[in-house]
Image 1: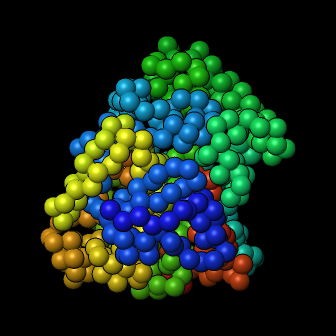
Image 2: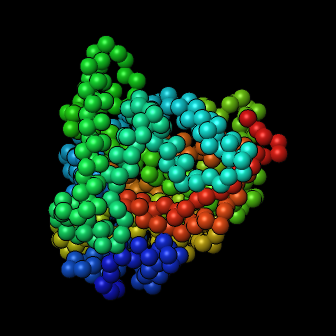
Image 3: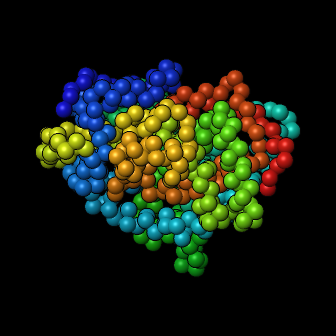
Length: 467
């Protein structure tokens, strides 16, 4: 296994915002050193893995040997106000996962599609229609964040964040201030988030406000639980959780449910403005769906948005919102198999870094890896077949991991993809979007995921609007 150099992950990632060099240096190192290489990060030994066979071994076959790094779980435990899916491992994670799995089954998500649709139409009415009349630019980044939080509020809590600015402000202020120093402290110094730094003091006050609001909502729900049928995800969780666990699960849903989705939408609309052929294809597909189903607000209609789905997948390939998996640690010495039939020795205590941002642009497995080609995700197309040939006829599992893989993959990925598909198809069918000079699609680390720096656009109704 090749050794590379010393590296500061968060310092490197922080420069993407200004340098535009995403996903470097990880991509160059993969192409130079291969599917596994060793780096020194501060005083730690880290192996960066991208080989698909090795990833299957680490994430699935021998997954229990590679729990999440403790300080990373501590960070997310602080973010979600306690113990939840992002901040526990082992048996406790399995218990939480078993509890949550039914909440994100297709049968349950189907019941939320009308909420996806009604909130999307509401935001068209309140934000985009007035912008068409006034020609004022719209900050789509902020609009998508509010839209996603409103959907999460209604589906998870039965709570309308649009009518509670205090809760919304508390949630936003509870997120960590993003800077290389702050991120290095949070992920490298135990207890850092409790330091008496002004921005962290302000953050802790916001966390207390948010915790109090959620606790009040939970107590109100508990009082009505015996006499009412479950209406939202939290109603289904409460009989099996303490109040503290319910708070943490709720913040986990809020965080995972809005952050990745809103940032994905920002990148999708940023990409579409320079690809008019993709816009035309989405509109044509939308018209077929309306002609067949009469509406887009059903699970079957969303499932038939094949090209729209491919556009989202290709956007996530080029802009990995979850750009890296939480680092893992190695409990016991292990020999990890590789695609070439060899194996690499991973000593106990070694940390494992998995960088999806670089994996998704690896020319070894992706044809024209820097180009936006949605057709590569539509089975049977020449573009699909070109990538398939590079992978030796194997599917893109463990080559493409926007939601990670294994027992700790994103539990809400079907929920997220369904709402994003509906929103993209609806907005593209109704409006033309033109970026202003303030739009900046460079990738910026938010402290949790990657987001476009700013997506600001003017909006016009399409000449022949569809509905």
